[in-house]
Image 1 (tube, rainbow, N blue to C red):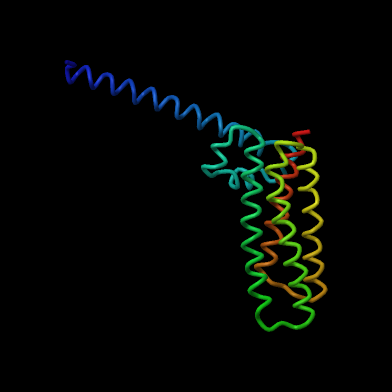
Image 2 (cartoon, rainbow, N blue to C red):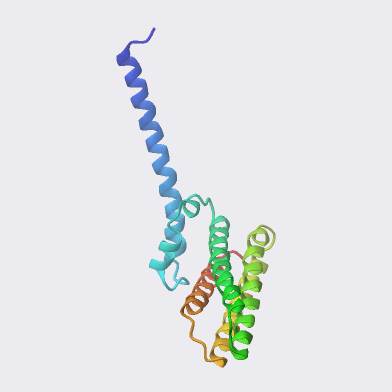
Length: 179
């Protein structure tokens, strides 16, 4: 039978072992995030680090998994804005405002599908994934132009357009290194 001192020693060694390995894993994953966000192609390093400072991003084992995290976040933010646009369309609007909102809703639906397409595509053809993300960028301009034509300044849509552009740009820059 083991003595209590022997048991404490074994438990202490076990906890130290677990502690050392858990920190090395986190630090390796953080290195991937730091490397990606520190790349010269990423214009806002601090925002990139903030975007990727979550458990799912830190658990990414490679750049593909990290891109998938960005695409999921981009799709989620875009869906949130789409929901706002659809609710806004249900309320009384001028014909010009309704046309602009419909245009933005179309843009947001398209971009959500593109964000969702990238993850599976990365495994097969990173160059095509990069191209599909590139298709999102000009879509944002369609919504912006429609809002300008209707003389609409809706802060939630301005923010949504910035987020959409940001996630598409970040994904584009990240996937640009994969082919």
